[in-house]
Length: 247
Image 1 (tube, rainbow, N blue to C red):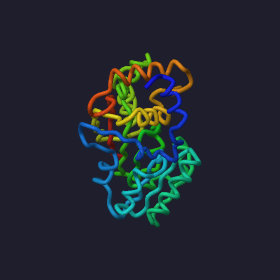
Image 2: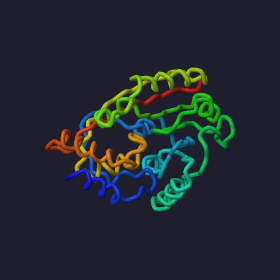
Image 3: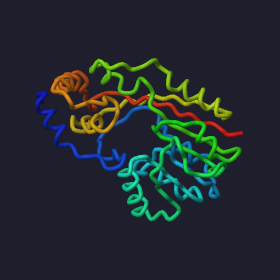
């Protein structure tokens, strides 16, 4: 395919409804880690769970049966609408999705037993405020080395490795959290087609301005040619999970 073909493909890929990337065909190799699996480990049937930056709710909805009440918030109204529809489709009566800013949580002090935050900006003071004493906070974030070969191909800065992790650990400590643990992991990804990769780049902040220049598609053509393997178009997913406890 030529650069012009990739540009045409960019215009054809479907719009995003919620943070649902289930339509993206991608084979992975590496540790099978996920924040919601870690959240489930600490859930009790009597718990109230808050999920910050919930998107379309697809990731957190499976936890509805593990808690008394699940509340998901997102600052995007379309995301919240999609999440409410997904909850209705799942028949989950103990789930509420609300439009809300994570920096100003509209909940009482000491209200939730667990707060989770997946790839959304972290406000440690607010998370600590709404957690009960002994409550647990868990977050999964994107590390600087995520999609490293793509960023390098486009000449983008990656940032100092571990800078975001260290910042969030420091902010959690300053907010009073204790027993802070860090889990870091890298997964190799193989996107099965150019359309799958373009969908990913179009709907994530990996390259915030992707598609706004004809040169982008020339770079993309070279990248795909140089990173195509028998398993797919190779890149990486780099993440870290932080868990902490409010004393």
